[in-house]
Length: 389
Image 1 (cartoon, helix red, strand yellow):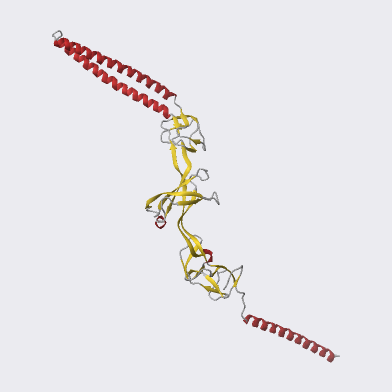
Image 2 (cartoon, rainbow, N blue to C red; image 1 turned 135 degrees about the vertical axis):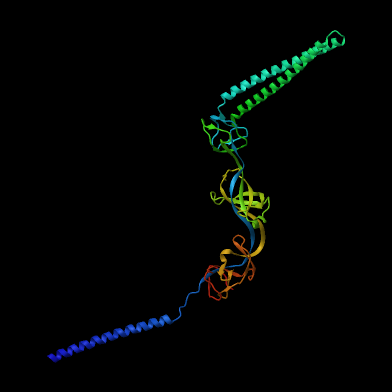
C-alpha cells in the first residue's frame, strides 16, 4: 500500500513537470516568432498627393496698407461771443446747409446795446450835418467880409474874426466826422455781436457731435458742434519708400472695411507726401473715397490695395504649392510615380501666385497637396484626378 501511494505521487509530479515544459516551450516559440516579425522591414503605403498642370496666369503686383478714414471737409463750430444757450435747433445726425441756424445765445442785452449804438450813430450823423452847415455859413460870412474889406467897408479885425469863425467851424466839423465814424463803427460792432449770438453752420454736412444744450454757458474758443461732410472721405495711411515709388497720383484704389465684409469701395490716390516720417520712415498717402451712400464712417480703419502692375500669361504656381526645403522654397513634380524636386527658380510672390522663372515648363504636373513630407525619389500615389506622366 505504501509503495503504491509513492508511485502515484511520483507519476503526478512527473506529469506536472511535463505540462510546465510544454507551456514554456510554447512561450519561447511565440517570443521567437515576434522577434522575427519585428526584424522584417515594414512596408509603408506611399503617400497620396494631388497634382495640377502648371499654367499661365494674370499676375497683379499690389501695394497694400491700412489707414484711417476721415471727412475731407470737417469743422469745429466755435461760438464768437460768451453767453448762455437760449435754443438749439439741430441734433447729431442732422444734415445742415451753409448758413443754417444751429443755436442761439441769449442776446437781450446785445439787442439793447445795438439799439443804443444805432441811436448814438443817428445823433452823431445829426451833429455832423450841423457842423457841415456851420462851416458853410462861416465860409460865406468870410467871403462877404473879405469883399467888404477889399472895398474898405470892413476892418481887419472883422476879417480876422470871420477867418477865426471859419477855422473853428472846420475844427468842429472834423470832430463831428470822427464822432460819426466812431458811432458808426460801434453800431457795426454791436450788430456783429448780435449776429454772433446766432451760431450758424459754415458748410453743408452732417452734425457729428453736439457739445451744448439749452442753458449751457459757452465761451469763445470752446467747440459747440462738429460738422463733417461725409459724402466724400479720405483714407490716410503710410507706405514704405519702396512702395511709395510704385504709387502715383490718380491711381485707382480698392478699399475694404471689417464692418462690411464682402464689400469693396473705390478710391483714388489724391496726395503723396514727398518726405518720409523721421520716426517710422514711411510716407503719408491720402486717398479720396466717394461715400454718397454713407456706408463708410469717419475714423474707421480701412484696408487699401493699389494694383501697380499687371502681367499676362505668366507661368506661376499657387503659394500653397510651395514646399519648404533647407535651401528655401521649391516645388515638387511627379515623374513615373515618384516625387521629384523641381529645383525651380521662383520670383517674388504676387498675391496668391508665385512666378516660375526656370526649372518647369507649362503643363508639368505640380504637387499642390500632400507635399509637406515629400523628398526626391519617394514613391507617391496621385489622387483626385491629378496627373503623373
